[in-house]
Length: 162
Ligand SMILES: Cc1cc2nc3c(=O)[nH]c(=O)nc-3n(C[C@H](O)[C@H](O)[C@H](O)COP(=O)(O)O)c2cc1C
Image (cartoon, rainbow, N blue to C red; front, side, top):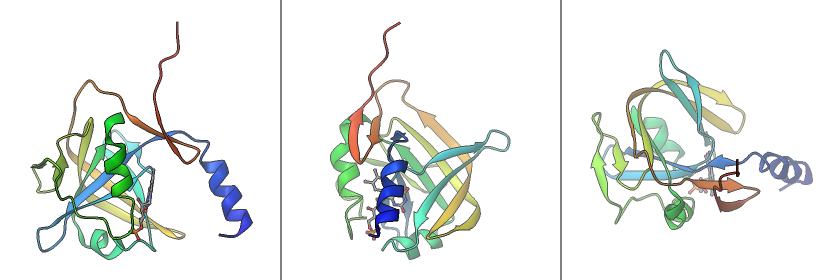
């Protein structure tokens, strides 16, 4: 990586985020997932959210074909899952407890919140594609703590006193 992009990534890494897994079914019905931290809310009415997908990802073609997907917000206990679904070629959701969303996207039982989306728009974003999703269904556990990503490391959230 060139020194400017390294420095750019390092600076971006100072923005602490949660960690999510985007899940969908490919045309064969196989459940696939990808670890992301580019998730953001966009609009309340209509309810829209976004995330961005690296054009160089080996999951790129698969995600460009889906019409529905789910964004699953990970708990602090899901670090191993996050690591696995960020490895090259490791997109299968084997061994994960899943349930079927109302529109067919697989949902991780362990997620602390989920947003089931239909593709609203896709925008070019340099070396990424920005997926804007219309939220068709959502839910949250109301408890559990999130997995946090900051400066290239997984962290846990701690509450400030007072
Ligand atoms: C915490 C974290 C956040 C990530 N966020 C994104 C993201 O928002 N978009 C993306 O395309 N890849 C993201 N990645 C990278 C992918 O999870 C994955 O590592 C990469 O796509 C693997 O290569 P492959 O898709 O070619 O198999 C993230 C990885 C980690 C560990």
